[in-house]
Image (cartoon, rainbow, N blue to C red):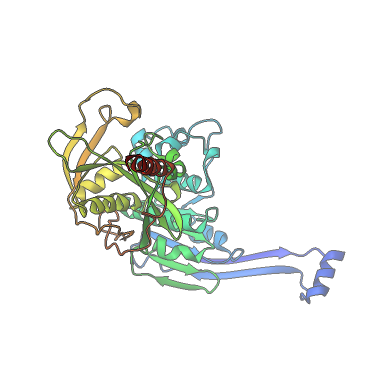
Length: 415
């Protein structure tokens, strides 16, 4: 079993200030400051995929990680090209499919941002790039120092769940995360935890990450401005789109919308228009949850709901889910002429999957969806949707106000 007997001794050089500090705080007179650890981790007793060494800053996590796993790849950050795209920062022997799959698997599923320079990404996006590159390393075990230290706590929890899901799906490499944040334990769901401060080691029964409670509110097209830069195809939104925003803990995390589907034979159909999850919240099934909520919401009002997507993760989910029926896979034939939305909005040039929602309906005006991911099932799905406060009917756009005024004037002239 990994064992470490560590002694760190820092000699004290006497000076006026040193003696002043000793006098102010009653620090015992000594020739050095000593820190000593004697650690045995029984991690060879059982198979494992993810381990966590946690403790406050300065408790010795980095030192113990190096001593306990001397043959592991110790990660302290990669060197990324200063003027090239993120995808060009991966080793040259990897093909584009491997790279994009790795990025998507850790929850960084925004192709426009893959083309940016690493220095232009947010801290959360950089963290996920590091994780994606680490997952492609040819190593049995990797040690990730300062795990989630540079990202905000909501993003840290979501990204921990995303990387845990990806690692357990791939089966390699084994990850030892070193972190000073205890809030990642339930989200990373490690097989074992060692608390440096207390010296306690424990095996854990895998429980899956905590559920994410989404509250979905009807919105105007103005809400699209927060999400438009993260759509994987286009930043355009049709002016006739009906829009919804999903929040988690009071923070907007996702956007979805639909349009009426004009069809020569089917009159009661709506189609999905734009669905986007902000980068810090990708990788835990929120996009699938809001898309299925929208399908259930429309089905509850008597509409059919169809969706066409080229996003690989969404296609995989719908292929496995009983809530969707696949009716087309491949290149769609070109029809009509290019609209104002541009060629990027058309699917004839890409491999896409066309599906119809066949899951349960959701009661009208339901405003939240609860979704939880188990370790052995498909990505998270929308479950019960208890009613909550909705913005529907509480605000009117300028166009609605103008139309109302025109109707009132017309009625007055008629009288």
